[in-house]
Length: 202
Length: 202
Image 1 (cartoon, rainbow over the protein chains, first blue to last red):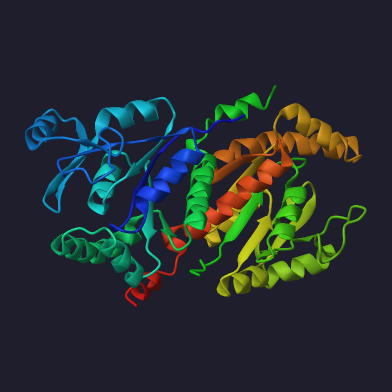
Image 2: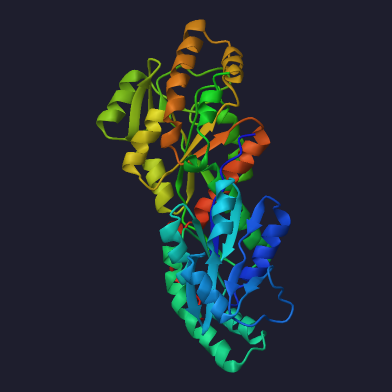
């Protein structure tokens, strides 16, 4: 088999689009895909596990890691810090693995500046109404939900700077579409080991 | 449904790689895909039908069409003329359809210069030995087979200028990989109708 080199696959979406559910499904179906766990200073939601959903850090620890350049990018979003640990991604890519990184729109742009080879996928909700309903279902403080919704409107404009747009209308279809993107990206000439051309002369 | 705009999908491969078989399978499975039939002055092989496999033309007629700019590109290959009719492709693309164009490496480069938005897929045989066997199986004059093989060696070098490389080792897998490329290309931001972003605010 001609195994392609892996790549960093960044998935961004307005909150409430279903990013986490889609990432979970992708990870379950593709054992060769690994997941970049972000760090954050926000409080864990019920059922969120430290080291699995996020590395939950205190603000002092977060800032210490910022000073030590341990993040590929970091940002303040809705009053909390979020950061993408650098070492995990760099070593996984060096091993030729595929890495899934769910991240907000600003973070995606920042990571792309450092890793131009990254694949950027933007997830869209099927409609504005559906997005509102999903955010309401989270039972957060109304202020938080309103802030997320205002932020989502701004983020949608950024969709055009991404490589791919996937609409999360039907979850199964959205997952299949991202799988097709992974397959196709693995077949891109730039990611293939071109010694295969030499090997043809066996 | 957010139907993506179509694109021209160019498939090139050294003779004997299985390009025609793969194109036939793709067309059978995807009714939304249409096929650009090339024109040629070479003699039909047994079972080849005029207007379906090629538009078989006399040399005078071919040259008349060249003068009338009826070809997107044309070339002399192994002593025969080959040309890609312009009007069919241009009108199919204008209708937003997907068009499959099997063409030699030089032709692919020429079409890309005119239609930079085209998707270029290069098909590789699994090994040089397999390619030789497949060409031998065609029962052509030894001189023709030898010329094709020499030409194939040169064409392999061009693979790196293509967008994607697919190895035709397992026919079913190769077809699925090209299908993934079609799906992913349809999800590319540049091909999507971005009025979907407006429609979100319903």
